[in-house]
Length: 219
Image (cartoon, rainbow, N blue to C red; front, side):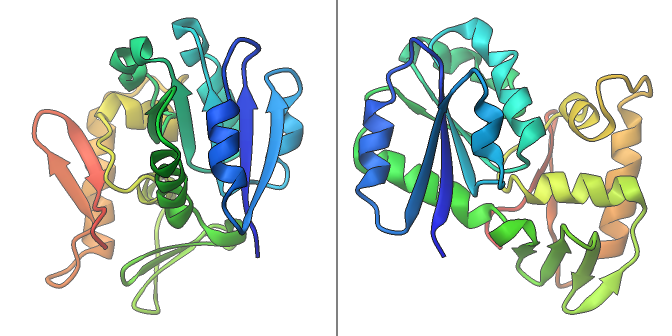
């Protein structure tokens, strides 16, 4: 089955490099759109969405909207001047600089595609499986009972292995911007989640001192 990649570009962005790089790869199906009406290329959900940006103001609006419509990894292609402000967007999973080589672009898309559930059905991380259709979680085939927020937190972290998220970022992404509870809520849910999915032989979530949490990439 072809890997579906959606490419969304702002009017002033240069997407020739990313299009040329991906069109040369067998097994990739490209859907392309501008920022007006781009929702059409996000259905069905692609394995990876590529967003070509030009200005800093676009970072605050476009990545969250793309991620809201398609819960898949998001690669941003930006000018060098924007690399210093990419950290402000929790919706972006990886980035490449405009003018990057074709091999780098292909490698980044392939890496993100490998972390994306096939057909939107299952996230497999070592012995852990998160079924995004049935909302069931199992460890070595044994079902794990989670609360809704524990499941949402696990699904979010497991969808972005290796990326560190602050407590504030997790509150915004999992609980929503209108949640007024303190960031201790995140610590409590991570602790409860760990108690259910981790044991002497399994560690999935790392605490990054003074920063936040991340799901291990080496699984």
